[in-house]
Amino acid sequence: MENHLLLILPILTPLLFAALGMILYKSRTAQRTTAIIGSAAQVAVTVLLFRRIWEEGIIAAQMGNWPAPFGISLVGDTFSGIMVLTVAVTSLAIFIYSLADIDKKREHYGYYPALNLLVMAVNGTLLTGDIFNMFVWFELTLISAFVLLSIGNTRQQLEGTIKYVIINLFSSALFLLAVGLLYGIVGSLNMADVAVKLESYENTGLITTISVLFMVSFGLKAAVFPLFFWLPSSYHTPPVAISAFFAGILTKVAIYVLARYYTLIFVQDVGYTHTILLWIGGLTMVIGVLGAAAQYEFRKILSIHIVSQIGYMIMGIALFTPMALLGTVFFVVNQIFVKMNLFLISGIANRLGGSFELKELGGLYKNYLWLGVLFLISAFSLAGFPPLSGFWAKFTLVYAGLEIQAWVIVGVALGVSLLTLFSMVKIWAFAFWKALPEGHPADTRDYQKRISTRDLILLAAPVVFLALLTVVIGVFPEYLYAVSERAAEQLMGRTEYIETVLQP
Amino acid sequence: MEILLAITVGILFSASLYLILKRSLIRVIIGILILSNAVNLVIFTMGRLTRGAPPLIEPDAYTAGAGIANALPQALILTAIVIGFGLFAFTLAIIYRYYLTTKNLRSDAMNDSETPVPHPFSFGKKEGK
Image 1 (cartoon, each protein chain N blue to C red):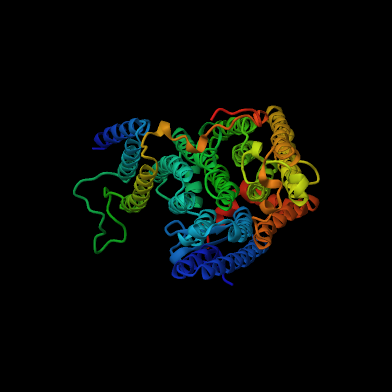
Image 2: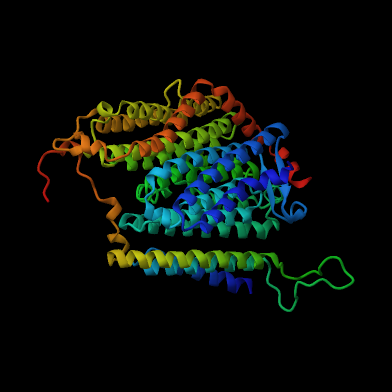
């Protein structure tokens, strides 16, 4: 297949199946079937795309055959390739989970098309090579995310949505402002072209100002330290499948964009911008993990933990060495699997135990040993236990920090790891180990039969799959390591990216 | 002309930030609306402001003459306005729906999703209801 077809297909497939889902609006079965088929097709397409990128290096396509700096370019390098692949695989897991998790009413309101559109917008953001086009994809991500957050109209959801909407509209306005200013000084919107033109632009102070505007905007979307308050107050309100998708993917897309901008475009004043990023990264880790220590709701603990993990990714971007970026890529991919899985497990715990509140849960280990094992795998991977995948992610980042003698950030990263374990053990002790609260109905047979075997299999299958992935990445880290290594090389050696885009 | 627009943008920005920091949700979204307009004006100004020089290329020339305004930022603004309009309509709808459900429009009373949970060790003891 041609390169341009391969690059456009990850965007077209979800769009096609979203449209099909809307046409088949009346039939619930048809909607569910098309959603699953579409998601499987999405995996196939992205595997093809990733294979091509792996064989040929960076590939680019000019939309409408307009030559590079004038038209919109789609670019696939190893980082965006592995991200698109991860999104496809995890969204398949989410779609399967949704079959049992999303109620009829929400399906009727168009849950599957909305989720497909969200996948489309995310893929667009990952593959585009044009700043303004990226803004448009981000807005599409936002509107689909708004719909998914508010679908069902419960009180909590509406409230969470309003908080999410307002902060994100604000951040988009800043993004647009920065795009406008950047266009004003270089007269181009193509990322590769902007990178070339900024090299000969003398007023570095102005560039730094614009780069900080971008930093604030994507910092809001990625939920970094002083800008994260919207995340813990909105992510726990929608159904589990939706919050798992958000938790796994949306903030990481913002991290992807930050990594792209701060390796390709804003490298004039690394000493200034990347030092800010390093401070942000360290503080984000600490505040996130401390915030989680104070929570006693399953999904709220996990939500605030997202913030803490975002700190690690920022740390990799801020250290700005090939090793550190390798760590960031590894960490992002691993984190998508692990965090999503923990959310999915919280959903199963809620179905089986009847609550998200740790104090009302209990006895899960006694009654459902398998769920305990699955939770332990993901939780230990999050905390960074060998031989699970999270260990290698943190190991690479810490190693990269030690290489350039950044002792403080390494110390913070290691300390935060320990505190992460504290939160995970808290969930373990309360939800799994503690005996059921007195008088809780979950011990009775009728209560356990509330959830049908078919539903339970649909809920458990994605969780088992993602947990297996975690173990496989942990035992054989060399494959993901090799991918991350090449992604980091391409991010650091930006000439390959620029040349591929500008000379078709 | 640039100075005038710069001052206008500054006023719009401060007005919108003032409104966003208010407690009433309606004022907050009006603030967001003003903010997006302020940003659009910034992009408009970035494309140079000239009077009486339409961005047209003479019949016998290949490039446009000097001193014309860049037309692309105006196209960008058009896109941004359309997107902003859609998002604003959605936001209004969601706030209206929230108002219908809760009869509340004050942001400091939006605590439904934040209800504090008693410490787990206090379970089983009497909780005042």
